[in-house]
Structures are given as C-alpha cells and as structure tokens.
Image (cartoon, rainbow, N blue to C red; front, side):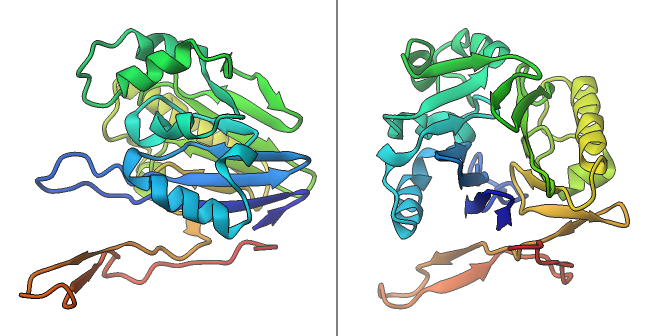
Amino acid sequence: MRVASFDIDILVQGFPGKTVCHGGLGWSTVALLRGEGRVVLIDTGSFNMRRLLLDQLARRNLAPTDVTDVLLTHAHYDHSINWIMFANAEVVIGADELGWAAAQPIGHPLVPELYIRDLATSPHLRAVADHEEIFPGFTAHAAPGHTPGHLIFQLATPERDVIFTGDAAKNRAELISRAADMTMDESASLRSIALIWDLWRRRPDTILVPGHDVPMVLENDVPTYVEARRAGITAWFDGDLESTTLFELKSTERARTRRAAGG
C-alpha cells in the first residue's frame, strides 16, 4: 500500500494463533517501508522466516544489504532474531527493552539471548526512549506489558497515520476485548492497549499493523481487516512425496475486509 511518500508491504503476515502441542508458533508480522531514501524493516521474524525474507526482498529487487533501518518492537525471538541479517542497517530497540533482555539468563524461553547480547555491543545499535523520533515523521512510543520495554511505532504523514503495534496488541481479538494474552504485566498491557486505541482514533483511515494479525482500519470504530489472510500447512500423510494434504488456517466465519486506499 502507498501512504504519502512511502510504500508499505507486509513481507510476512502475522497469524493470531497458538500451536496445540508443539511449543511456540511465532508467526509474526514483518513489514517493509520504503521511501525518502530509506528501506526499513519493522521487526524481523524468527529463524524459520529467513528464506522467506530473502525471497520477499528479492521480489522487490532488494538485498539484505539494502536495508537501512531495522526497528524492533521488542526482544522476543519471533520478532528480533533476524536483525543480524542486515549488515548495513541501524538497529533500533527500546533502551529499557534491551537492558531487560540482555540481563536474561541463557535458556530463556523467549529471548534469543546470544543474539541480544551481540546486539548490545553492536556499532549499529540505536537504543531509543519513549517519544523519540526515529526519523522524520516516525516516532517510538513506550507500550510495556508484553515485555518491560516494548515499543510501538507511529508513521505520521499528511494523508494518514500507520501504527505498528508489535505484541502490545497482537491481534484483533486483543484490540476488541481490550485484554492481553501472554503478558508480563497485565495492567501495563491494558494501559498500552488504551494508548493504541487513542492513537488509532485520532485520525480517520489510520492503518494499524499488529504483531500477529493482518492490517486493519477502523470502520464505525470497529477494527476491520484491509488485507486478506493467507495461512496454511501442507503435510505428508500418504506413501509418497508427491501427495500432500493442505490445511488452510482461516476462520469459519467470513472475515470482513476492505482494501486500504492507495493499496
């Protein structure tokens, strides 16, 4: 989608679900923003997304070395681990988040401790604070709860805003219910969700990009998808490699979608 002077693409769609018996699913959103001389990634996905990220960048005639900025909403593995792929990029993370994550012991279930410790000493690191402008028109806001130093990012343009919420509001269900799943501090998460709603309502047609769902806008104050969801798994249940079974992961109810203006 086109927003003012920026092209915004969802390289990897986030998915609002959990596995039943295979640990963390970690299908998180990776967004690409291009414009005004910058190639920006908002979050970088988990290790299993590396080939997909390379393919998605190549489809846009980009290489990892073309990425100028990597913005991390928080330090969990499914959002942060691939920062190391982008050798020329400045890597932005909340100062409070980095301090917390770097102090976690080896074996933490969600923090990729060795990657975070490497980031803490990287010359490409930029640790930022609440309300800090990352580049003109693009601001970080503290949104703790899911993790202690979680950030959300807001792009403000003359046409409309775009809010990247990471896991401060992971999906549509959290936004509608004003409740948070998988949070370190529930009361802080509720305040962060209230902040997101306040920012979302300030301007009409503001696009919200959550950490584990597809982009949305508000229609009559109701979160409404602007992009169709695509998710599935293929499995080998037969006796040859040519025969696979497809499981499409989608709601049994038809989701309302609306194409974003300029998209």
